[in-house]
Each structure stands twice: as C-alpha cells, then as structure tokens.
Image 1 (tube, helix red, strand yellow):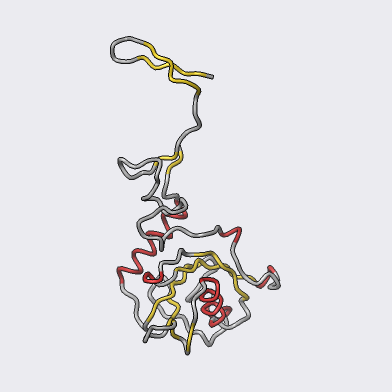
Image 2 (tube, rainbow, N blue to C red):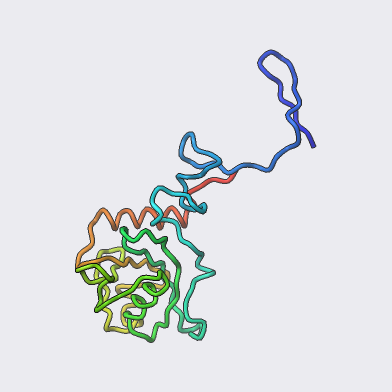
Length: 183
C-alpha cells in the first residue's frame, strides 16, 4: 500500500509504499545508526554493557543437570571491553568454576589468578561490592550472598569502586527494562 502526506500548503504528494518501522533510540537525535544503543550489534559507546545473549540462551556445560544449574549475569572488567554474558554453573561446584568458566568464555587467560599482563588478582564481586569466596560451593553462597540470576562482576584487585557498581547496576537494569524503543 501507499501513503500520502499533506504539506503545509495543502498539496498532497505520494510518499511511496509503507515501510516497516525503523528503530529509534531514546537518545534525542539518534536513529538508524543506533551507535548509542548497546543492544544493537556494534552499538553503544561502552561495549561493556548489553548482554551478548539472553537468560534463555545462557552458556555453560550442557552436562550439568537442569536441577543443579544456577544462572548468573557476568560482567567483565571494564578495561577488557567484552560484553556481559548470561552463564550457568553447577551449584554443587566451587565458586572458582564461575571465575574459570567466565574467563574461558571471554577468551582471556589466567596465570596464577591474574589476567596475563596484570599485577592484580581477578576476583568475583556481587552488586553489593562483596568479594565472592572462591573456595566455597555456589550452594553455600545461595540465599545469603548470591541469588539465582544474580549479577557478578569480574574485577582486578580486592576492591571495586562504587562508580563501577553503580554503572553495572544501571546497565543490568537497562538491559532488563529495555534500553531502546522499537517503533
């Protein structure tokens, strides 16, 4: 079908066939390129936001029985520029498996608990800023420190800045609440 448009001078012109709606970003003045939106490929000024998959397509060892799976949103250190990912792990295994699995999935290399080339240890943090003990089973953390579908942050060092935690909270909320509007 075609559509018409009446201009301010009361003339009518034919615009052509109706096109599917284009995606528009909430950011004023942005459309088509979507460079401001992390949920589109190649979009987002900070490629550290916007999950690379969904909870339904979480990655992990397919041999883990569904009853023992525990899903987490994993955010990588800001300086490695890798998008967060939903992953699942065996709740009966040590939390160190989360660190090992996330690092392997991102294609990073650990050497004595540190990313190659970094002087600081890589740790897992909760959104409360707590360091996750890697020697305990995930089951021991569940209900107190962790909850299924929690967000975990990989960061270098023993502390994480409040700014980083706030940025991850916003990114996680934007992704779940939808950062873009499709019109």
